[in-house]
Image (cartoon, rainbow, N blue to C red):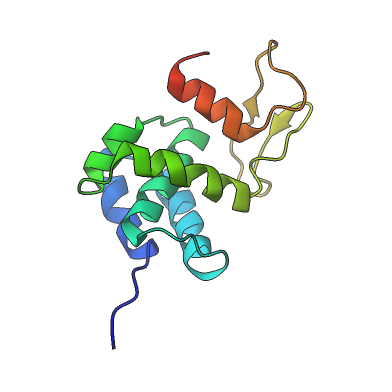
Length: 136
């Protein structure tokens, strides 16, 4: 019997390597667990874990670059993270546009607000991509 390639067990170490908060670690762990069990992503567990950490860090305002996360995840490429994180956000329903803010109910996090130049239909994935590119 072979071991499953799961993301969840890898998240804590990646978060520790990046010195992320408990809040970011918990969110990333939740994302990875759901990616493992509820909406499997056709990528290695290490790529999914790194992408979950990247998403969580962005959402709790502890921004790390894709390259930094990749190094902390033992060599996952930033290209792999860039290809995977939008799928995690989509499954977590963070890509749904909102007129005023995006928030994850029940977690007490600050809202991620759109800047005034963003159109009402622009989703979180586009906003995070814009932040990554430095368009803010």
